[in-house]
Length: 325
Image 1: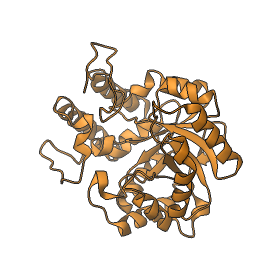
Image 2: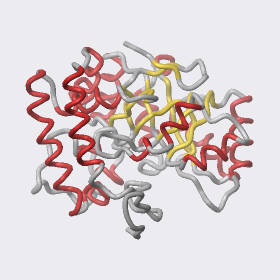
Image 3: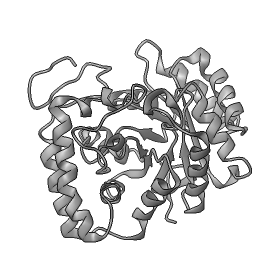
Image 4: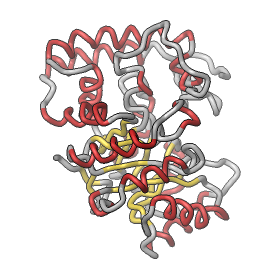
């Protein structure tokens, strides 16, 4: 399977990676650990070499499941996990993650969210020390603005960024993607299928259990949800003509975007990850790519400018007045 280099490192990952966020019940609802482990094994069997997780995913449960799933196969995987930008917890958090993951190093170590109350200089100094010690191989940041990436790069080398990016949610194209391409920083996308909205499996009347919190996302809000579903319906006949699924269509579009190194997918079953892996088996014809781009442009340009998918921070709208969410 094709592999792409992370930034200026010697780390190479497949264009589709398996995301471990759903391998825990605290956001995505109930999950079965045995199914998650079978999904990990299937990902490796079909050639995917990149797995991503974090201690914040169900209080370390996702890391524990990933550790079990990689038992005896750690050498086959580029493994990433995360930490919060609080200097005095970084080393301890990494040690706890390594224990849960049953390994003595991780390949990519991401700062999960920026912390405006903590200096990035100290954070980056600790991460660079961990790199020198061989505990991590590369440094990443997630959910950072371009300005924060530039600040972090003053104190160390940022090798990769992990932002939300998909056919609907394209805000990194304004500045983060150009900055990353210019500075040879890898881009690993999360919410690559808009947390399921782009799979073609959801309807206006789809119900979610109380422990499935995806409807918290801005994309599920009344002003956006119908538009998102309509977009998927417009993509469905295009996928059918090509003999593929809507998920495969939008993933192929995504991994073809400039600067994208790998797209993480939160597959929950072996069949789902096998489906997603097959996006590498074919190319999108130019006319189809242009049509998909037009559909993407229509919904993307109709949305206010959001910084994150949950309204945690003040959002801004470059096409209109600012507002709070």
